[in-house]
Length: 213
Image (cartoon, rainbow, N blue to C red; front, side, top):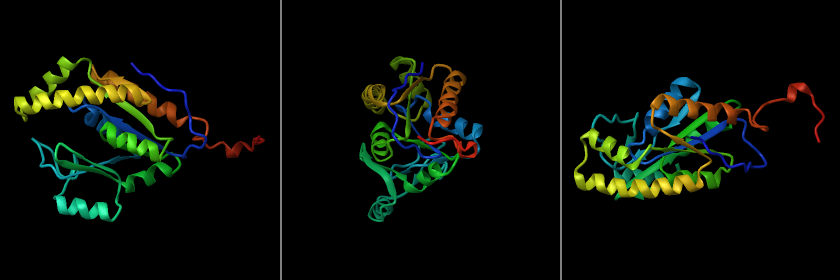
């Protein structure tokens, strides 16, 4: 299911800035990588974090894993477009990826939580926000347990956080995609990108030499 809000900013950047958010276990990172494969020109933001890697996570691919002192130095140098402390760890998104969305036909994708996504949306109102939802909270818990990386206590905390995250995303994001079947969810995500790229203001029609109002 996809829902959208009709409001449009007065001026759109020539490229597209996409913000993907979801509770842990909903599949947003998998969908982000599928999007990158479908659109090779896409620049995927890899967040920085001070938390340790989990399971098969790869430094530089899933996250940039850094120590707290390095993260603090990056804050001081104003290198993040957004950053936050979550469950005692710091997470931040580099400003550099934003530049990609300012290029004609550019595509920048941020895989971040609602707090970070909302922060970027305030700074860049033409950003497109897409929230990935699980088909049910029971299915989300099943997916988290199937990872085998967290204790029961951690999973329960994640489920509480997930419900709050889903409520915020459902209320404020431009589009909602339910990830029941991965291929169907990706097709909806792909359709949003294609549609948003054809928004008035993003399509270069200067060659037509039309009379301007």
